[in-house]
Image (cartoon, rainbow, N blue to C red; front, side, top):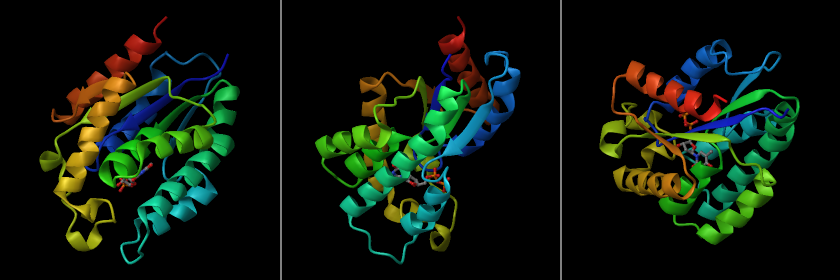
Length: 208
Ligand code: TYD
């Protein structure tokens, strides 16, 4: 039986990465995964040696990167990630949790940067080969609340792009959540409550 593919999405500062860490601990102990299935936790950009090399390029504030070039770099990262990492794990019956996937490209490069949405959808098909998550958890937090506490000198190109940019990205996630039937997790609650809501969503989705 093929494995399951779960994705966590949300704007910068929505608490995504720490919830992914909690999932890493909880999911293998949840009794939801069949015997013998392992959990692979991964991320985009990254998740493969190529992807990890692309990260510093994508985040470097000193580099001028045209929005279409940025779009193609994220697509390249994803194509490698799907072929090298996600699909083989699913085919072997393992479960995969990815911190971000193709929804982030629609939200950031599409809604945020204004790249053509049709073009993004074509690229998404190419990069994913048609692979879609079994469940996408969307951590919903207004950008004013998510505003990163990192000093400006330590922010990457996305964190430093300003509140209006992040509002467009947040609007994109909201639109996607409706179109793609994502599970909305209110992320303004205490960490433990967010974690409980995530576990509940996963149980409801995968309990047979
Ligand atoms: P993330 O890994 O969540 O940041 P951090 O490691 O700082 O917690 O995401 C990296 C950044 O990349 C984030 O600002 C969103 C951006 N991004 C896109 O713009 N498009 C994409 O397709 C992906 C996957 C990420």
